[in-house]
Image (cartoon, rainbow, N blue to C red):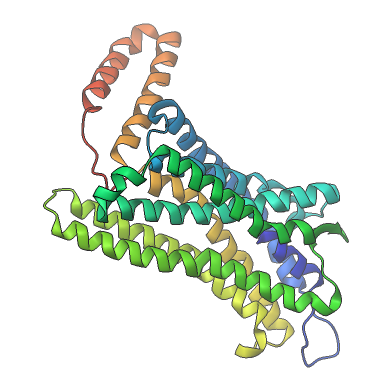
Length: 349
C-alpha cells in the first residue's frame, strides 16, 4: 500500500552490516516527485470511468442480474480505492497534516476498496464460469438476490481483512503510517505483506486460471461467430491482471526478505523502495482499466454509454445551436434506436 511505503521511507531500518542507519533519502525524494502526479492521474481516470459504470448500471441496466450487481460493487470498490489518493499524494509531497482520526478512516477506506475490488473481480470470474460452463445451474443461481447476498458477504470479509490497517495506522512524526512495537514490527510487516500478496495475487490468479480454462474449453466446443472475440477478451483479463499486480508483489517480497537475495545494503534498500513505488503505481492503474475490461467491453454497455452521451449532446446542441445541429442530433438518436436491439454474446459481459 502507498501508506505502508511512506512508513518504510521514513522509519524502516534493517540489520545491515554497517554502523549508520539507512535513511532511504533517495527513495523519499523520488516518491515526493513521482507519486503526486501519478496519484492525480489515477484519481482522475478512476473517478470518471467508474462513475460512468455506476451511472449506466443504475440508469439504463437497472441491476437486472448478478453480473450487474457485481459490476456495480466493483465500480464502488474502485471509487473507494481512489478516494483517498489525494491525501496520500499530499503526504508523499509534504507531510501528513490531517490528524490521527482521518489517518485511520482513510487507511480503512483505502484497504476496504483494495480488498473488495479484488474479491469482486473473483466473483465476476466465477459468475462468467457459471454462466458459460454450467448454464443450466446458472439460470437458478445467477439472480439479483444471490448476487446481493454474496456482495454483502464480500464487503464483510473485506472489512475484516482491512481491520488490522485501521487498528495499527496512526498519525505520528508527520506521517500516517503503521506503528508496531519494536519487537513485533518485523513479524507484522511480513504477515501483512504476505497476506496482501496471497489475497491480492495468488488466490485471484488460481481462480482465474481454473475458471477461464474451463470457459475457453466450453466456448471452443460451441458454434458461435463471436466465440473468438470472447476468448480474446478472456485472455486480456488474465494477462492485464497478471501484468499489473505481479511486479508489485515481487517488489514487496524483495523488501521483506532482503537477505534471501543479498539486498542487505543501503543502496539496495533504496532501489527496492523505489521499485515498490513504481510498481504500486502501475498496480493502481488497474482500477482505471476495470471499467474498460468488465463493462465497456460489452456491446450492450457500449450502446448504453453511447445513448447517454448522444442524449446529453443532443440537449446541449439543441439548446445552444438548434439551427445547426437539430437534424444531426435527430439522425444520431434514430441510429441509436435501431441498434439497441442487437444481441450481446453472454461471454463478453
